[in-house]
Each structure stands twice: as C-alpha cells, then as structure tokens.
Image 1 (cartoon, rainbow, N blue to C red):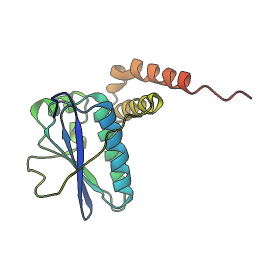
Image 2: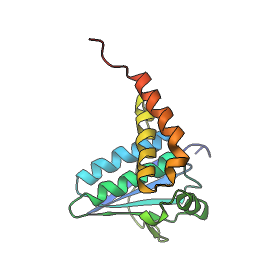
Image 3: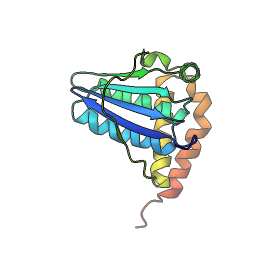
Image 4: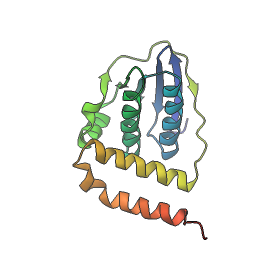
Length: 171
C-alpha cells in the first residue's frame, strides 16, 4: 500500500461495529466512515470501536466526524459509545488540543479476531465534501466552545462555498 493512501475497513459483531483506519485519514475516508457508521448504528450497532493503531495523525474534519458519531450513538437505543483503540500519542495530543479527548473511551487492546472488510473509498462530489467539512467543524465548535475561534473563518468560508455550489432555484 502506498504510504500516503488511507484505508478504511470494518467488522461487526452483535451490537458493535469496529472500524480500522490505516494511514492518515483522507477527506473521502472521513465521509465514508460517517456513512458506514450511520448505517450500522441504524442497524443496532451502538458500540463503535475505531482502531487507530496504524493511523499516525488526524485532521479536524476526521475528528469532527468522530464527534458526530459520539452524538449519533448516544441517541441510539440503548445509548452507545465510541471507543478509540490504540490511539498514538500524536493522535491523543490532536484530540486534546481540540478539547474533545474526554468525549471518547480510550483502549489499548487490539480489535481481536474480527474479520474485516474494506470500505470502498469512492470520491465524493465537491458539494458533498464541503458539506462534510462544514458539519464536522460545526460539531467541533459545539463540542468545545474554544474551537469557535479556531474554526470561525473555516466555517464562514465553507458556508459561502456551499452557497456558491448550490445557488437557489430561479423562479
């Protein structure tokens, strides 16, 4: 595998879904993680494990998607959790610098003998990527108020970009 290429795979067991992230998460990987996790949560998998053993670092969009997933599993019946497995020191530091490290359970154990299948990372449209980035950064701001100053300009730019991509219908 190319060192720059990111990969997402998943496995399920009763009540839980485990995602394995290999490489630095791309924008497409973040979107596919959100889509796949939403489907699995709707199917009753309220415990999400995210194996980050082979993930050297994360960006704010990926972290925002993780925050979205914590909110989604908390709304499930029964309420669930998101557990980050084998998150390295840099990833923990990145989560802490965004004020959200305490939103996740952390574990050092491996994902065991689950059988993983790859998630196909098909490119999303520009509008889909813009929407994903926008909602991820709004979730980061909602999760930790200090992020508002960090991401105010990003959110404003993405909102304007989304409006340019989808102009209102002409009459």
